[in-house]
Length: 485
Image (cartoon, rainbow, N blue to C red; front, side, top):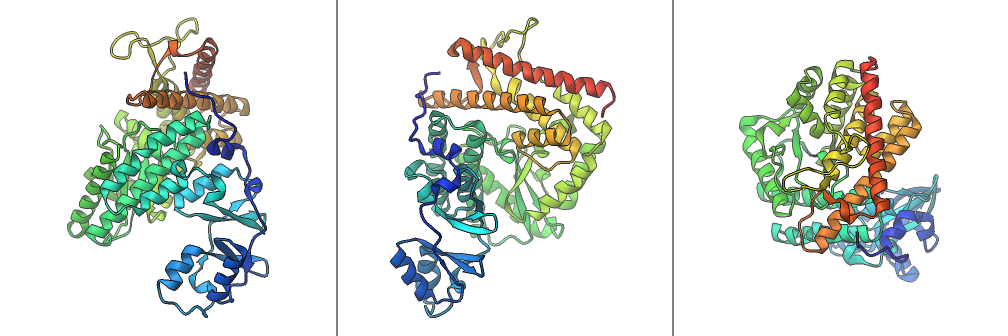
């Protein structure tokens, strides 16, 4: 792996290890919400800040930015003698003072915002801006998301999406964790999806009933890389009438899925996308789907659980999915028959270890001599973590988060969970670095690693990671055979 080493000045690497506390540059600039818009603008000018916090008796009411002054006051012709609360963002998203800077960057990227109040418990500690997080705006996830939401048409989104591969290379070179990289890269896909839906609604008109666009698979888990197809679906309000509303949502889904494909997220080979009629249904039908998969875990049902049990709301009315998932988790918790079938299905994917514990590469075909890091290393861990989450009825979706909660709930012991999380981080980081190297060389990203590209030390680490996965699979298999499930 001949990638350049990370540098101490790299902004993304610093954000992985630097707490928000260290990024604050000054005490918060505050005003009561009753002062005038003009007085707020004058204070911002005098203090040379781009935002102020609105505080009354120590409680945060909202914030006002220079953009609010421009768009909500001046451009709207508003009387500047009115209270500043009239143009404020009320109940703003906040971040704890001890959170890593990366979490602040991710919060801004996901919600397309540039100012986040920082809280020390119940006390206001300051304001964090996008420019506080990084000086390299061209590779900042916050600015990339902002650029995505400014695009008026698909052509601009295609250009913006092309920067995602460069972002992944940058993160790999910086030594960013796979966990962080997955969240940042997925934030780009979320933004593209959200903007495509906005553009579709602009063309087709407002949706006739509520809906939620749902990311599934790796996007749902916040684990996307530069090589990702799309897995998604639509959950519609039960007021949906296929005769009256069907054509609208068919057109909406087709436009978004085709748009994502144009942006580099290829159509799912198994057609698990919202543009497929089966995966664009009202909530009551989705409830029937999930209940059937849990109650009758046949091979097709088990295959579908690998995609649709890893879901997250991206755009629209999130409650439609949240309430559905809560019902499903109640059904899976402690469901012995369903979990036993999941275990058997998970054990069908084994790490590539030989009889004496050595790594066994692919023996023939296009990828002869290589190791599939995804299917033979990462996917088995994803499967194990999913089983633990469903067994405990826990709503975590990200694999690292699921393993952490599995230890807390006792589904697996703390040491095994720690080892499995370390193995996942190593395998996923190796995959990201491998993809970054191929992209830098002008090749398409893939998951097939040439063992000769690794040092002896890295090869030993790879073998150890595979061994950890195999050990935990054996433990799970033994528990199943002992009737634990």
